Length: 240
Image (cartoon, rainbow, N blue to C red; front, top):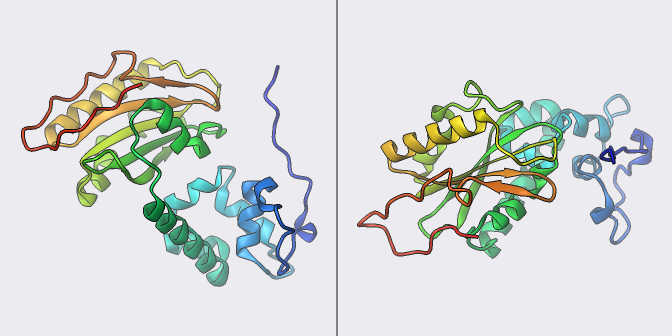
């Protein structure tokens, strides 16, 4: 059976400009509609739904964290862009405050990055971890068909070095619904693991995501566990 394509019947005039949605409604809204509600009132020529569409560019709401504040404001306007930036910062603080738990298995990675699992375009993600395998940040490195030209070690490790990450979990989605790795997936994973050894930042796993399934390079023996460092705290490695 073909996958159902999500549609939105709302047009700009259907979205409330200032009144809050009914109780319980936000959970049932699409990412596009939620972003439009955060943006709030717009001009007659530039309604919230249109600005939200420019921001998301066909992707899930999580792609917003890839945009710089300047880019967000250029697409959404000064007032709306500030609201989006504030919402992103609030979400980041909530996650840091409550914690989403240790990413100790590929299944946890699927849940953590589920916003990207069913995306229509491939998203290559880097999950930055601290020494206890707690996620510090989820970074979108590239969007589009995975290739060595799009996923360069420089782009993958730049933030990890700047942020002082202790380890990385790589992940990307397969819009086809089949999580089996391609030859390019295997080559890129091996290349990034070698670079991680050189710079001292462990590549713990690479997980291919779909809406319901995943493929773990670590589980399938395609990525060897990194050797323990003498100065590293004792902790249980990622496992199924």
